[in-house]
Image (cartoon, rainbow, N blue to C red; front, side, top):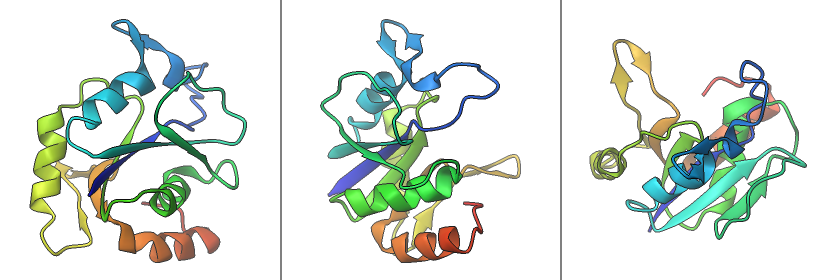
Length: 149
């Protein structure tokens, strides 16, 4: 089974408002991204911050236990909630994401723990596929406040 996590709990400091609920071509950003990734994944789980208001959804919503710890904490929270062994991860502010890219990353992971694209020297950790088995390491890093994905 292939799962997907859509991170929607960012603070949106530069934006000044919650990005997840911003409209984009007739739907919210989080709904659009979820629809796109659902074309390549069997389940979609949203990872939100505590108390975050989200649009009505059929997706499962899980919440970070502690606010402000960033994407690695969201990854750990989400990995505990999914059913699939392979998990695509993205942020809610990626409305131009292509399902074919998601499917290709699932196909490329092989026996590795992660399939993380690199473009122009930039590691794209929030457009990647991880094995659910990395959850213990993610939780260990969060507990020691080593928060870089």
